Length: 233
Image 1 (tube, rainbow, N blue to C red):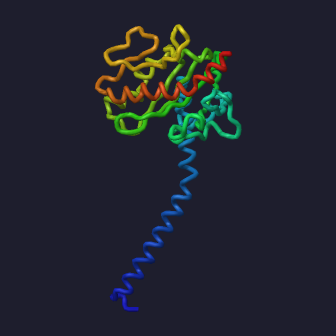
Image 2: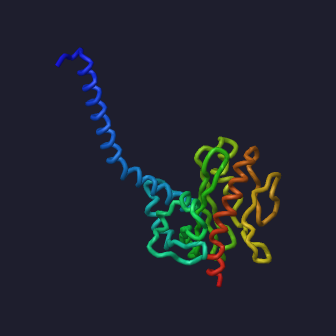
Image 3: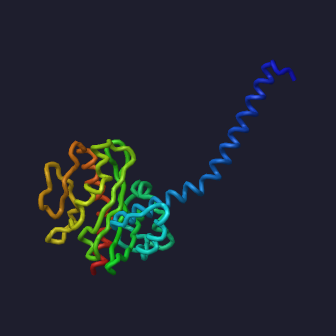
């Protein structure tokens, strides 16, 4: 075949594209298990962070096994759901469903002092993209033990502050039910929450992200309220 002909150039290009595409597919498939494992480790790390337990990729699995004693799935009626793995629930997808069809993960932890903590998952919308996290409660399922938040693309120094220990520490010992046992969640107040047991200080210059976080807490924790009521009974 004439290597200078258009036919040769066309065939050569097609073969090259097929070979490159095949190689890329093989690489993607071979890397998928490692990528999935990294996602699982990151999720476990975030869950532990809500318990104020620091972990690394090397020790996260051991610490997760040490502290997380149980996990299960519930619906918005507070009932346990069989055959749905809590760890595999993607809240982004659940929130697209009607409340009656949603599934929510519950993680039960035992801390070093022997006390029980309950961890709920969170997912919402910030200024530029999704925000998410986990929030841990004492066994009264009212007092917050710890919180962890993260984001995809919030502004550094502003909305991205939700991912800092300083901001997250504000949530410790805050409550989600008022004196009348009404669910109030945790507000995020611009200008200072003071000694308000149901609010924290908003991020300076991160108004929209603060509002997104407030809405995320109200929506996601609110989905667990019937479970909380049944647990208290």
